[in-house]
Length: 150
Image (tube, rainbow, N blue to C red; front, side, top):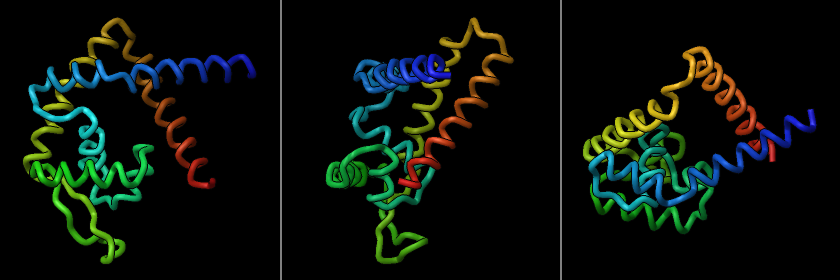
């Protein structure tokens, strides 16, 4: 299993490298036809999918510093893409929620991402795609569970 773990680590490092490069984000934003700073759209997507979210929780989800996320959320709010409201769990916390305008942007980004990923998987068997989704989701869930114990 040592070899497999090493190969998995290398694959994850390669994938992380691709995801952290500015060019794929810029290409996605261009394909979606939206005007949005590429540093902001991962936050917007997380708020849309998991919101309402407080700044601390959002910072943990995206692996960024609290103060950076706070400034970026303020920018998204000024653009009308998110709004702030009392958190359902703790009324003292102001949580970020997606607005209709923000949802329109995430919908456009999702459609562009769908086309890009479909192109990447075009030569894959459907069963391989299903296996990838199932196993990657399982691995991500286990990793998230482990991180919560730290």
